[in-house]
Image (cartoon, rainbow, N blue to C red):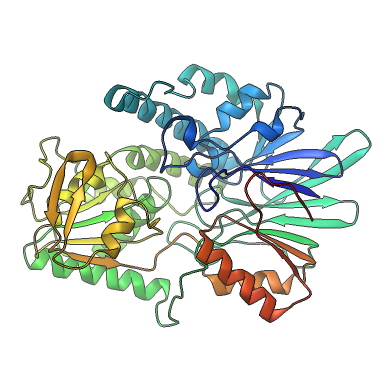
Length: 452
């Protein structure tokens, strides 16, 4: 197998990997790096220019995995795109939202190359999507070579898939983004047992050691307690969330807590793309049975839309719970504006429930000391951070020890590391070396071919 990581800056971002297995050429994911703008946010597709792809495989619908898909499909006009059935129900909506965001950024920030693709282009490309049910084998042929591809539920978000590839007698597995624990709306990963020659695995939480006492259930209890304490003392709480997956899970968690009398009465404010995806989740739940979700949670919680009259840096004074994207408090998102409004007051709380890149505003808020000044650069606002800032372990990614155990039980000849910052990858390199020195561990250099 030949492999090239097309994410030019490495780490987590424009996730995309070119794989040649016995002459069958695949692209696994085609993402966009949210920390950059314009073409700088794209994978580097130059190694594909003299190559005819046999298929693109999408592991799931977060934009760091699909955000450049129309670009590469334009450059490879006949290649089919394989994904799970729930992903096929979500992907166009996510890409259309990306066009809306790029059009707004073009107007506000003067980015000349935006949008990188159009609404019409997305609609035209949908006919090339291949919907592959979990557990069903798809054969790909190129010349005299045949691959068998099977998708397995990966937890993480609706439709997320691990990719099982059989070539002759060799099995290769791509984990994609994976969560082994069950979430409120979604079962955990169900990956096959048995030996794999090579595993290509995410490493997102390699630098994060979660204490055994912090289970998902205990962290949900702590979140509800944090909300109650904040509201009771007259404050407001912001929970920054990813619009796809985490927002719908937290709506369900809040509705359950209120139903059991565990959540104080207060306005719940949520909006944006995540509220649109509520309807998609309801449809996926009814048509595929892969989700535990019902759109009625929005009505039962009496969810309100965010006010358009918020002023950066000024406390809205509503004594409310804000459930808003983006999860990393990226510039010019609802959570970014509300964070600037709440951060300066001790009665308020900002509670992070998922992964935050250290270079994003969310990551920097987590790192800053209490009472220090924080610059919300995009809105030219400086705030002294007096609010309570909490990190809760409710990530959609598996803990590092779970991933390590998963890989070691498959007794692979080789491990390829992906989707993780350098400290996270370094932890896996050392742990695999300690646990089984016979395993070949590869941390690919971006744009450099690796033979596995």
